[in-house]
Amino acid sequence: MFFNKSLQKENQRLKEELRNLWQVQESLEADMLRMTLDQEGRIVSVNNLFQEVTGRNLSVIQGCHLMELIPHKPPVSG
Image: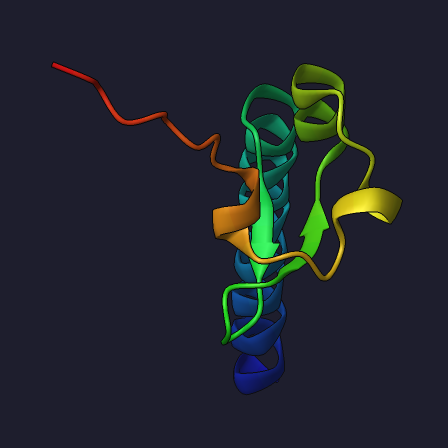
């Protein structure tokens, strides 16, 4: 009986902790630009905020290399 209640209490504590972590993740997703890359540096996914701020739709940039998003700076002539 004690063992069962102990497990139930621990289970409840872990559920609450997980709920808190989900809230943090949702907050970060809403407030920060997020991009996920594969091992080669190609874009796998971006969040909605990234698409809104950059004006780049995932369907257009998915599979592109990260370096393709960086504007090229022309050489400075002296």
